[in-house]
Image (tube, rainbow, N blue to C red; front, side, top):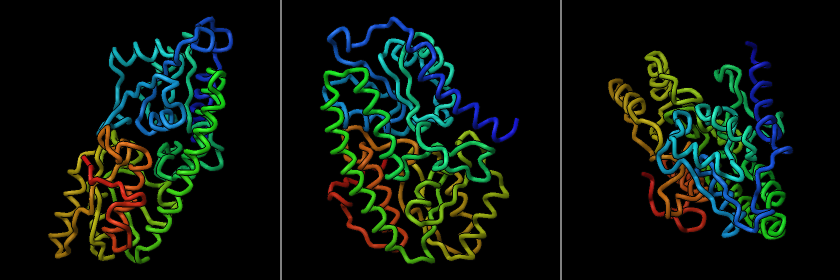
Length: 330
């Protein structure tokens, strides 16, 4: 199957999930029953956007919490039941939640509105790194401005499902996007403070390509786009060579990915007389602990940018862009 055909099939799937059998469904929603919308979402980044837009007007149920890897996640029976009973389901798409596709299709066929929020972005914007085997990179939330572009998909769909609260959703969405604009500016500022020769972000897997493009930092992942792929010994040795030759002093682990490959890099560099430290734990495919600032999308990105900048020789306030960082990285 060609790259173009694979991408077309996945975008077609997103269209099918949001249109097929929905218009002709007789499934009642709160818009015609007077109850709250019952919404299910996958990764916490999507859940957090919904909660910022909808507030108390919607009952929101996020399936994946702290430390959960969406690439490997298989829905439980309870998850499937929640999805089938929901008025609407939101997920990232672009193959991030690849093991849940059958469940999404089943929900769409049952009349549930299903929204792959990242697949509504302009195709010209999406990244397709050379080693991604013809697939789009799904980690769009790593570019704050890009993630902000996903907010209207959620806002417009909620307003359509629940027109009585449409104005409230749109007002909250505008306020939230204003916060994201400020966050985006902060990330640009602190990452640009890293000396150019040290502006290299090496992590456990390929989740930071959008971050690299948006904030002008070279990114390298030991594993590929999905944590289902394994890092080859040649990959480890190649990255050790890079660390030693470029005198890179810090690499990063991720909260939802094993740190064994990162530790192998550090050991390999040490064998060659070069000291590399762990610059911190970053949030890639999952946010921080529930109830913490890092357990919000803004806190997640603030933590990442602040941690990266400080570890690589840049300038960033210890408590981050809003002075709220708690150090909750696991």
